[in-house]
Length: 443
Ligand SMILES: *Cc1c(COP(=O)(O)O)cnc(C)c1O
Image (cartoon, rainbow, N blue to C red; front, top):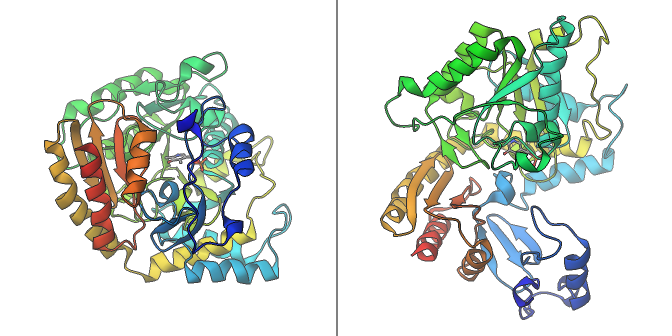
């Protein structure tokens, strides 16, 4: 059991005792609280956080960790940002939330106007959702309702490349990679979708025409029953951290046009500058029919996502019966979340995220490259503010996590992958701490 006990080392005298979890708290956490993707029987250790500022996460034990994960790719401007804090504080004194059915407000309108402005051309309608998975559910439901309302309910399936990840709810899960997504476990309840091989041509290599053939053949064979193609543009994230050639995405758009299928781009992970473009679709100069956004939308402050669609899709969905789009989350358009999203987008629009991401990319290339010479490493790849080291076999997460914490960094490997997606505000010295820690841990 020793390794399962929540790591809570010697209290640091800089912190008041109320910040330190008691033994009783730790036991409660272990016995009663689910953490993401963890076991109730044999939980992995957790570290107690007492604060976070800039790129640092502060632990109760006194360590200050450079965050290489941006809290699952959300905290692009860093923690405790004065402008984001102020946005929440100002809004909370006005009102925090009102139902969005029959009511509207400035924070939501400002946010949707900005999203329409900055996203690829033609995405003119915004549906505010409460998490990434829900925005994917909404996108898929839109596609199904679109075809049903044209009297074509035969088009009710989805096609997606393998190695994708689109969320943990059931419709989203049905289009995740069938192996990573453990479809066998839910085979009786998951809708059977169609999967093409994952794109193979790397981002910066010569495009190989054979790469699109399997998808093309599947679409030719199944287009009569396909509502949409769903794909993460340019970077497949949680399904393998794979970076592929923009021509693949261009051809997806072309195939969707040719065979009358909607294109859904899931930019929940890649949106807001992460890949070096504001949206990864821009690498291929592609506009989808439906776009999902989430994760970094509020700068990591709270949960909010959005599904944008073209006017054609919006009109199509609302033709005939029932005449409305059948979705409406309780917390739709939450004013606190919209306000902090507005503040985050303002920073994006004012600040030089492009320079920051470009510098991170250059440094990641320079400093991660040498990992390729390590015995255990199979591949190193970088795009924008994403650095990935793929190992030859699966990693021991708990052990590596501990080593990283001891080195003063927060990096959370999964499967064979060690990756970093730091906040854009990270400075070169802090970034070197991350890349050095990866090198040392794998050496
Ligand atoms: C994280 C993620 C999701 C799911 O978002 P949640 O907010 O966790 O529900 C969907 N798609 C992609 C590409 C993601 O990275």
